[in-house]
Length: 410
Image (cartoon, rainbow, N blue to C red; front, side, top):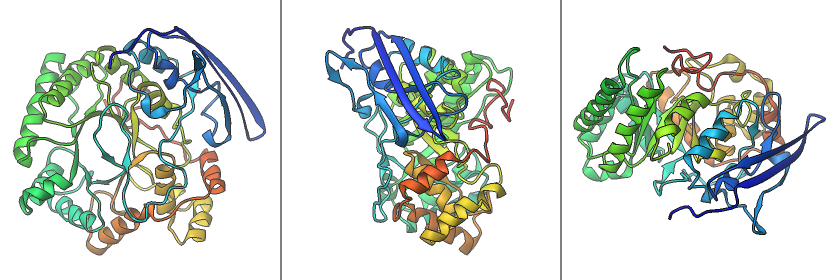
């Protein structure tokens, strides 16, 4: 469906109270897209992070006396509007609106995260094989499948080879049951946009050949300090999507400036942004969630529920999580994961506290416990306590390139 003309001026206001402080925000936006008012349903002027969506009162924009309430219909935001609002997120922190019920219990089944620009079903819980050997990756997938998990999140190289090994041991029907998510390697610093595009194109073909599959389900692009490299590689991603080599495309560790770069030339917006999220970072993750979700329809795929690149002891031993866990008969790690899920984000889980390994029974039990996160729910009061935590804080795109502030990479 093509976007139709609409009144260009939209005003959105918010009033909310948190921690005894009252926040009021107003935003006037000039947009060329009639659906832009659906993306900017709430903005908050805040010194650090957005106020909880559970305590907010929103006066939504109205268009011809029709109140817009359906976040799932956010699908036609113009490139110009998206770039403009993502560029403003440093001053304005939009409020996120989870599309997953906050107290949902799915009796063991793993639901799908609604992706806003595709009909691809994105399982909310993924096995994270980061750093694993070929053998450990294959073993971890076996354990995950025992628990009903189908989403496998892996890197090129030995993890990919482990996925290929697993697939080779099973019939073709098993491939149809799996959701395969992988990533394009970062182009080395100084790589030209043309060469970077060729590297991405070659890797896609190599991965499909080694996996012995026609396509993957989600292909995600890492960032670069060079916007032209991001744009050239994203064009390759779009071509892979058009050619059926992947069913959906997303990005990895994209800060606002990286999002702006990709949106400047994108014909297809990213379906997800894969970033680090854990308690203490705020439910809106320094405004990055809303910069993607509310504005451009880019859903959040979270890793690092207990920290990265190793478990964060401030999370593992946190008294708030321990008290909540005791009330539910759960570990702090399970509480940390449930908080992410209940805030409407998909999550990629490490099998156990032994990051990068799958050590027999520890690995099996770790996956089993985390896969049960849809069997129970945190209360509104518990969620509010976890939402309000401000430590341990982290950079959600820590493992991005030097193009993002305080990045770990080059």
